Image 1 (cartoon, one colour):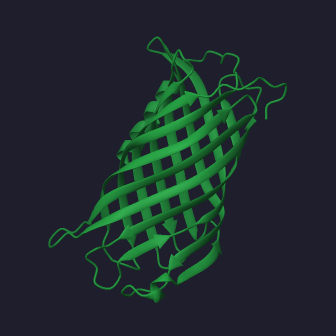
Image 2 (cartoon, one colour):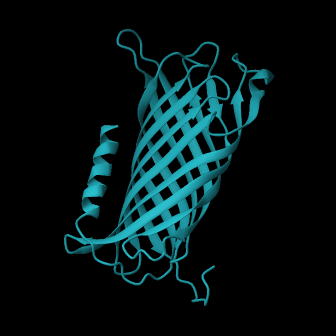
Image 3 (tube, helix red, strand yellow):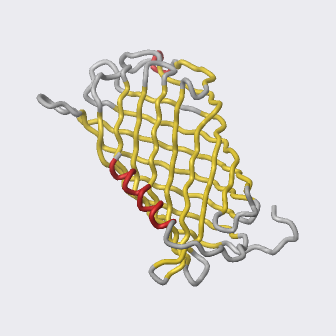
Length: 267
């Protein structure tokens, strides 16, 4: 958690450096590509009493639209981590963790009279999956969950000027509120029974999933942007057994501006 706390402190500190009003904001549309490194910690008490952790890579593709009234985002992402069990003495077994997700977010600006920041509140529809392959387990090799549902989302952004450059600071938070989830309920060697699942409609009491991102953008002269992202993703799934996954990611994102015709009313 120390990197996360340090990053939050840095953002809060930079936000106090300037109190200038934000210039008139023109709507923008971007195609986005993202790549970076992750550290994941994973524990599934249906499959092992041990905690696994390790480094990996994460990739995103998507789009982003922002205007005075709306923030809209499409995000398709995946990651892979080589993880190993953490024990003080004895053999540390190696496993692999795979995650992917797809989400479409719509959020509308609130407090439009405030000229110092833009705050958007709304929701998203999403599908994610978190899978683990425990190659050294004797009787249970493959762990997963597959939640699909709706989430509450918010996006807060502010334009800043420091180091003689224009920057944009932002934070984005998403928490599922209603989810249709699936988890394995059979622990055995590979056969047809491994494909049976424990299904259920769950809320935050059974599936807590926090996806929180802190971002700093550097607008470029050609209308594109470069963005650095710190992503903290935590999931606690209690539908069948208990699956806990915590991921910290450091990402670099390229935003390529897509021009479109001006309209009287923002869509």
